[in-house]
Amino acid sequence: MDPIQQEYELSLKLFVVFSRANRAVVDRIKEDIKNYGLNPTEFAVLELLFHKGDQPIQNIGKKILLTSGSMTYVIDQLEKKGLLTRKQCKEDRRITYASITEEGRLLMEDIFPKHRNVIHDMFSSLNREEQEQMIHLLKKLGLQLGSQSID
Image (cartoon, rainbow, N blue to C red; front, side, top):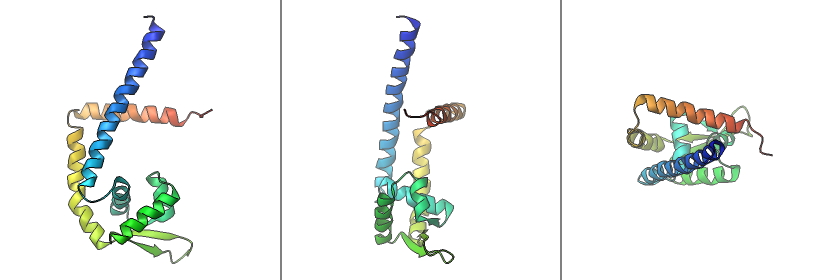
C-alpha cells in the first residue's frame, strides 16, 4: 500500500475508533443522568444554572446547543418538576431568566458529585498526561474544523 493510501486508511480507522469511543462515553453519561430522573438536556440546563446562576433563557440554548423551541419545552418540564422558575428581568421585560429553585439546587448538590465521579471513572484508564494530551488534540481538531467553511 502506498503512503497516501496508508494515510487515508489511518484517517478512516481514527474516525471509527473516535466515533465508537464517543458513543460509549455519551451512552454512559446518558445512563448515569437517567438514574436521577432527568434527561441529558434537563441535566445540562440544571448544571448550567447550578454553576453559573440565573441565565436568560435565550442564552441557555446557545450555551448547551439547543434550538429555542426545544429550550422552551425543557424549561417547561423542569418548571413542572419544581426544579427551576422563570423570572422577568426588571430592567428589560423582554428578557426572562431561568432560575434554579431550592429543590433544584438540593438535587444538584446531591447528584453532581456522583456524576463527576462517573466522569472521572470513565477517563481513569488515561493518566493525567494522556488526558491533557487528549484535551489538546481534541481542541486542535475542533478548532481546525470550526474554522473551515462547509462549501
